Image 1 (cartoon, rainbow over the protein chains, first blue to last red):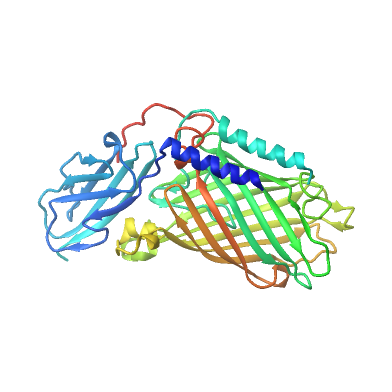
Image 2 (cartoon, each protein chain N blue to C red):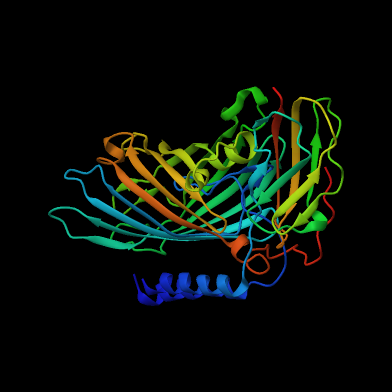
Length: 117
Length: 321
């Protein structure tokens, strides 16, 4: 059974040599996924498990009335995506994001946070 | 088993690993926001670039007295195009029964051709068709572990996540199910050496799984420990029911129910399950099944982690909602 060990070793060495990347999972968000905050946040921050490709990673936030409240193109640095939020009232905010990790793997997701409820 | 055959298999696997051309592509089993992990006893509903190495199980058979069985297997799955994939795998088995000689050897080589019927991101639904072929005469026939005849099993696979339930469903949205059903035809209807008919068998199973990663990123972040947030508790079940050409054989359905958990990382996953036989014919006592599973598309995103055909090295298009 030496061959499987050799294959695992080869895989490990190749992985180290290529500096591989992977799918970008949402690691945490601010405000937290599903949380309730007392006042409307000025900014939404999403942190992922991998670095992002800025040109192809996006986020959209809709407020309690269903209108978009994000201020457009997010700022992306490394594995973090930030977008400013327009002033809005209490209620449920829906976040929908697409992420492209630097090795071209795409992921997407959505969640809700609540203000003042 | 002849040593040259094992070497041949090792060489074939090595060639697949090092010679695949540079192209491009995407993921393992993501459907919208849902990630279906590679399950241990049944298959997930996606074509993918991945490798299970090894899968190890320990169990006791339903014989009297029970024999102890070890199975060590490996499987490599590779996409040919974005929607068409092929897998190749084999199992080494050792059976020890008190009062009898130990039997050991490889089962027949197994290949699976799979086509991705559909993926629906919004409803977290995936469907797959496959043809599993166990190539007779490629394993340890003399020890009874392999067979001189082949079997063909057309199989339908599906997966469904419940993230599309209303938000009021809360944490229930992290549940998902997968399933598969296949019909196994042997290429011979009678086993001359064993003096018995070879039945046609309905092979089916599925899983119910609860995704802690999904709970954290889509529903509610409870700020649980990182290890917990990577877990997918799961119950798998697999069954086989002889349905035709079964004269003189037991008509009993055999199978196991496997509760366990899968830890999902960025490049690999580790799964561990108990194997509970559904009846005496399926085994004696509780067995154990474990697996290390590698995501080749994440480990080697620009080489062997991409489809053989139809890939592109061009930058992806701008995403839009």
